[in-house]
Length: 335
Image 1 (spheres, rainbow, N blue to C red):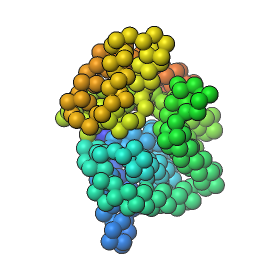
Image 2: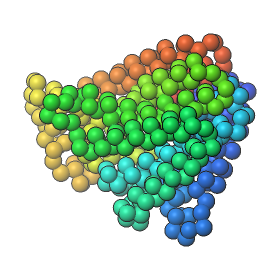
Image 3: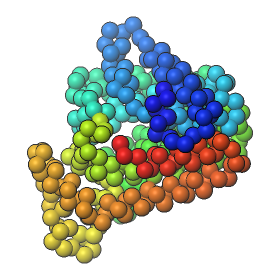
């Protein structure tokens, strides 16, 4: 799994070897965790797992655990737990968003239908919950609280802000629940189960909340800037699926406050038919040239700096430096 670590450059060699070795074990345990004799689920349960992924959340578990004893068996179970939970949420999210692809492959519901995709996600959540039961009462509670936030984040995204809600606060709240909550619990589990101590666990939790939102804002940027062939994601995927992103919210706010011809053209396209590749490409190009894209990038970098400031509460060590690199890589990634 050394290739996964390529997203974190300049990591201490000994630490990198340790994390890579444990990531290999996580990968095998993931497959063991979803193994079943059921003729249907043995294929659907592995579908998104086999499609790939950077294993960001397990990696954070292992980096956090490197502050303590990474060799504790509970650490590997925690890494598997967070990735299973993440994978389960993807099955559900793709149904809710009517996504066409995921990780360069057809979304599961496109292959088997909505019901099978949702039930496969439920199956993975069940396996994750079973795994959490072996990690102690605190881990069960943290996982349950995270599961609740994942559900609330998806619900609030689906329903949208109320009339009296600030649309930006609502959006950032959705990101905190849908993305940051699981990244935060990954850091907490890694630090706690490795024996790194409550102070380290608190730092990693607060860090995860910050870097998780930054990570998703970076994804908003990627949705517009990624080029075909460099990612499993097609430029403008979120636009076509009608998923709110910070650049589009910024454009809509500017249109409401100070409308001009350019902003009106973007909003008209956002509200129009994006089913054709040509119309989508036109909108993507307009947004690439719009100041909202750079504003989003700057917000992600600001949150990244705040996350690094939290990590700096840890004593100097190769792990702290690796977490610095991890943060920067997550926010400045190109795919």
